Length: 247
Image (cartoon, rainbow, N blue to C red; front, side, top):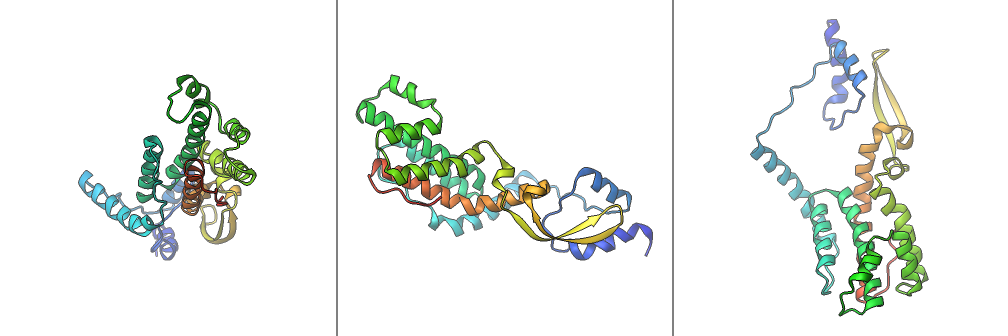
């Protein structure tokens, strides 16, 4: 075994079947300097890329489509359009984008209900929309409480959604989003000692290299919870059904 093969033989058992490789640029360069051989990137045509992506997404869509909330029977095209956008994001595996849009749906639905209450459902009140449209969600929830659009529990759930889902996602607070993520076991290469080390119980909040992987998992676990909560808000406002405790 020559020197240049050492690192490749060392990593081979761990690289087989691996789907993720995380390292900073200096570590990668150190590994290359030790003889690491990297596979050439696969170059796909646009048609090949599109075909592969759609095939992968079709599998995701088939698994999740039956779990999505159905659009309510309400004559509000902007709200129903948001249902379509959220559903399409989920079907294409874009869970982070879908969660952000659930926050938009919740906020827009409450604002619409406030304008309806203050102006009359059949009247377009431009001035009232101007007053409400640019308000932040916190003051909007407070106004909805004054107008008794939700019961006490509904207001608590809205505040919880705002603090735990809406704010972290719209501000992309990735450290906050992944604070509870723990990787139970990982294989780490030490470029100084040229040794493989096992790592256990790695917390994402202490290891930024886990943020992206961790967020994808959190997104997957959160997206239906967020969408169902947003749906319950819409139904409470426009179909007069109780809000659900889902956050």
